[in-house]
Length: 345
Image 1 (tube, helix red, strand yellow):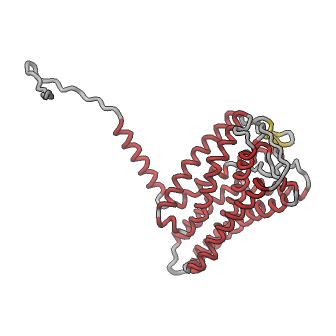
Image 2: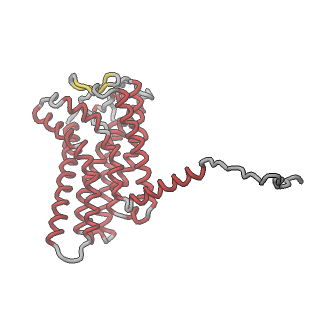
Image 3: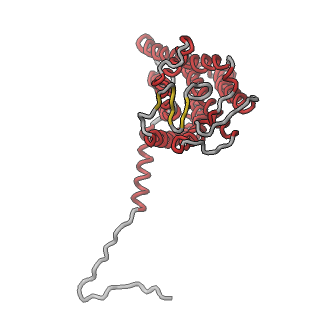
């Protein structure tokens, strides 16, 4: 999830991300490469682990609170497998790996689609948590589940996938590809129109406001009801659903919101070089939304520590089983001929 996507004013020279004279040269090139590589590998392993349990555990698969995260993990997996490796090659060699215009467009498409779908899904999950905790009975009927659960998730995902497919792949533009820049220096001509403002406020501002508002109000409502409502209430379940959301939302608080606020401030004031140093580093670290998102979803797996211990125990047992053993030869008493088995036929 590179914040330098689309119509951003971040420029790349060789393997250095720069903006208005500032750059991330303070972090050595080899350090930037290994930061991304190690983070991507760990995130990929975590994604497979979480998706395996969410998809193959019947209770987790049918849990309404997990569906938005399942879709988000699948979309994020495309970033980890396709987007990040291409960027790593560029970061290390200073040139795009596959110098084909269609690949450059697909690369930009994956980055742009994930950058907008993930925040929207988390924003919807933040709102839906209010229903799942305080109005769970509304979703008992299939009609309500389809209308207020499946359709919103499907609409959010399909809308952005189709929108950015049209913008990046089918919109006729006079494209110029520079293979010494990330994403081949490609940006759709749609960002030369008023669509830039639409994307900033609908994707950036709206998602940020929804995540912040619904997650904060959820905490307030849970705490308020905890001390005011008397009776049989499953507080353990409510606490778990709240913590699950906060783990994921905190990632966006740190790596997503500040860049959105900075972008809005630049648009309002017209000062395009305001916060240049922070903008460059924020764009570099924006990939950590993708890297950390699977770890934020770990909270959806029950008895996570127990499952990790079992995996480590199995690995330890297998390692012990294949380890070489030294067998000592037993000496026979003095003067006694050793007994040998006759293997001849």
